[in-house]
Structure formats: structure tokens, C-alpha cells
Length: 218
Image (cartoon, rainbow, N blue to C red; front, side):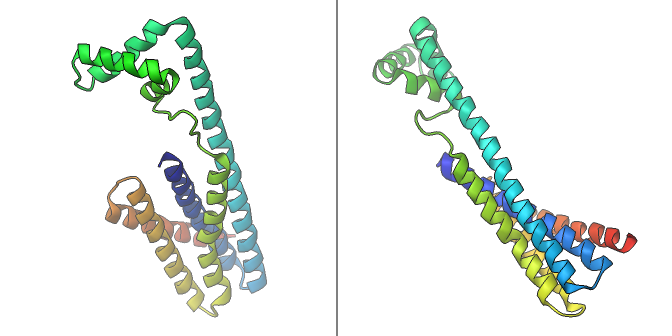
């Protein structure tokens, strides 16, 4: 479940970043020029740059987390050899803090440490399931494709809709994709769905307004 949630998290973040960065570039360039090819190339270049940047960032971040988890496991394996009683006390305290009677908690700790000592200790101390580490490649690819998909609809709206309708189409595309990203992020984090959707839409519209102003200014 943790691995799946990590991929979903990377996907949601990638999608949100793809929407905002691509529409920011598109609106700035479109406000400064009416050349469709220029607008398209600028948007496409930013979409690709954003997607690969997000993928690289996720890979580095999750790799660091994976290495940290492995280092913690190695540390606890060494402590089991040098400080067995201390490790057992930690497991006992874990269950006592959750309402188990001390005698029962001690019996549980002894039983678990006899069967799966390392798995028990790392789960109690770090909430790590031994042998189940987050995969940086999964997070990287999820972020790559979601960032590309997130920016694709605004890019298509701005470059393939003619006349002034392109602005309305782009705003609608940003609103729809931002709402979807907000909904997914709220569901993923057990947050307030309506608030997340509204917040994302407002951020998207503010992004459009700011970058439109920049494009007109220069």
C-alpha cells in the first residue's frame, strides 16, 4: 500500500506541476505574440522540461529515502547483536504505549523478537516493512507521465483553438485539470475534497493572470 501511495503521490505532484508550469509559459508567450508555431514550441519545450525535471527530482528523492531506510535497517541489525535487551525494551514500550499491560507487552516482545527480530524492530521504530523499499523508478515514471499529461490539455487548447476562443479554452482546460488534481490529492491525503478542488482552480487562474501580465509587460 505504501508503494502504491508513493506512486500516486508522485503522479499527483507531477500533474499539478505540469499544469501550472506549462500554462504559465503558454500564457506569457501567447500574450506577447500571436505566432502559433512560437506558442506551440514554447509550450512543448516547457512540457518536456517539466516532465523530465519532475522525474529526475522524484528519482533522487525516493532514492535518498530508500538509502536512509536501508541504513536504518543495518543500524538496527547491529544493535540486535550488541544490545538485545535494549531492543526488546523498545518493542515492549511500543505496546505499552498502545494500552497493553506491561507483562503482556513483554511476552509479545519476547515472542516477536524470537521469530522475526529485525523485522519487528524496524517496524516498531521506523514503520518500515523489511524488504519492502520504495522504488524510485516507479515514482520517477509516474511523475514523468503525469506531468506530461497535466500540461498536454492546456497546450492543445492554446495552440489548436483559433482566435480569442483559445483563451477561454485554455482557462477551461486549466480549471478542469486543476480540479481533477485537487480531487485526487484530497482523496489521497484524506483531506477535504471540495476545498482542495477550489484551491487548485484558484491557483491555476492566478497563475494565468500573473503570466498574462508578464507577457503583456514585455
